Length: 359
Image (cartoon, rainbow, N blue to C red; front, side, top):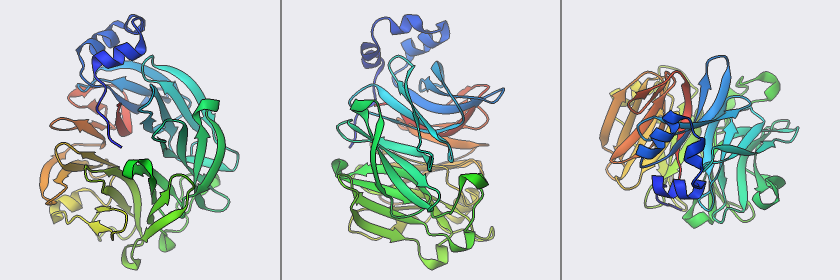
């Protein structure tokens, strides 16, 4: 499901006439000049964390504190609610109001679960689906949270793999695509990887209504250490996915691929110098559907690049330290870095892995 970015007029209408008056002067000025609103998690000095609302120029509108490091943000296209998820193996997700910048609800995971940093709202906004880890059984799960009852958890279904990371709605919300990274981890071991020699990465499609498995694509044996992580959809409904390779550093398998229901997975053949520049690590995947481009970033490689979704040809490439966050900003993308850059702006915070353009 696709929708248009919220503009300043719509944002102010949703927020109410008093919202701009509650902002600090710089935030009010930024809101007055922007055409689109973005959300991104950050890390600030003194080990403080939060999620910021920003303009396309990187000017901050407001900040919402988080109890620990965040990862990704998802938003409900039917309301002004958004959710910032903890970085794995975190145990919180903060619901906040994008129109007021105020917290709404702190969701805490069950004692035998932790979050993987990603989630999506159902098309009607009544449910929130969250990527979770049943860590004692090393099984990825999709948690179901009822928005109308205050985001209480009402159920879950299997992700049909381990190390479940990004999840995306597809085909109008009938199906859910799941990227299972395949790495065995337990919160008692922090972020230690316990099965590098026997990883089980996969890409899965399930029925959104009941979690029924529709199809599963496992990585071939020769690239079973290629962990599938992040995804986005193009204008034709293809899922684009980015990977992180946990194998020998002198190997450089392709890191960007696509698939759709009923078809085999296929990888985009990046030119070798571009591929090597990602240092076997893709941190974010974003599709600009109007421009027909898919962009991927690597904070480890200090590089981001965009490719034509039809021809696979390289369209953009930039070397920039710590780059990871990507979002659509016509005619291309806006990017953020761990060193504080957001577009052309520079701040004192370290931006986390993702940028969400609010719609």
